[in-house]
Amino acid sequence: MSWNPIVNDGAAVLEAIDMERRRRLSFRDAWIVVAAMNGGASVICSEDFNHGRKLGSVQVLNPFVDTES
Image (tube, rainbow, N blue to C red; front, side, top):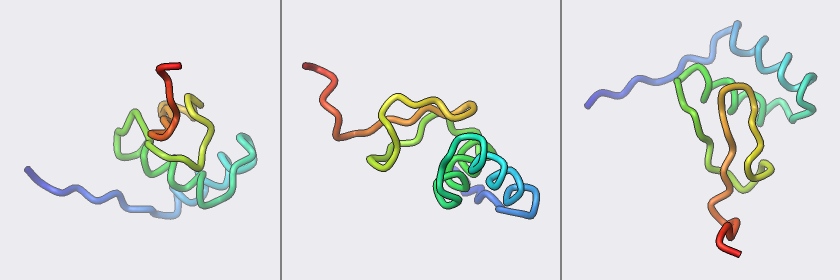
């Protein structure tokens, strides 16, 4: 197993700024999504986004949402 950190370079910052405007996210949230996309993640687990929201190639899941009821 190896650790492959995601480098948030200038291109990632510009991509996050674009996503911030297009998706009406805070810059911080947009940057998290861009890093996840660049790292190949398909899911973000967060209570700060809307459960089930699709942002690019990443889907947001809120671990505190009760999907059973």
